[in-house]
Length: 369
Image (cartoon, rainbow, N blue to C red; front, side, top):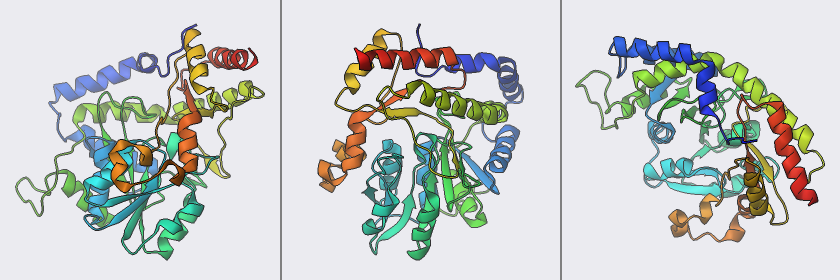
């Protein structure tokens, strides 16, 4: 049996007629930049997230950068984020001119460790960027308390958590602003790069929209310098189709995660843990493989036709890109340990129980061999 890590072709085949029709509409109307499809998607996604505003942009990294710029963050400021995530999060902080400050992760959830956050706050700290990693919501209530107590802003990095729920609130509606990636492999993925910023704040929404559009609202009325980062009509139309299917796809991801939990019980790998009151969306299904056996298990699964991934093989503070911060590996022990032991198994809505059972069986065979 061959099981890919993700199967975008299967997803396309399931909604082919809707997607093809949407693409044809954009081409027939020459609605490539801006236009009705972008506006319709922005309205629909704002409603989906439970906020007033959605600003479509070129990609998830741009979304983070533009949101931080809209908050006025720049040179001399510090912004706190998690040590275990993709570099786009920290990269966007540095792009503003601010200094990135890392916090170690909770070893159970792999998300930012709230108990270690306050010790990183200084007089220069302006914002916190919690990451809802793997589709598991970060623990936002204590984060909000810390932010309020220290007059800090919160920008949610929700690139992997479209539609996740935290204690009755949709991810993206909890902080001051939130940023999404629609990279093709995401739970809500475009057919190219795309992203969005969402917020309930009218002023922040206006600033973000201006920043993404050369600092303007009207064609030549530039109130400031901005950037060129736009969600195009084709991607918006595709995302609009997919958004209608997203709740069902999310439910299927959860069902698949719980099947994994059942079949992996007793195999020795550590399966994901959900904190109280959350509804994750399992962008990734990540297990922990102890005793230095991760690479051997990966190779064994590959021999069985099973593709896997590692998200992420190096904790951010340990990357060469951040050598200038002079961190040692002992500074972030949990993120470093996770980078050495986590393994991502195939996860997508189209995954069948027979495939999950086969994957779990192969893991059991390896453990008992």
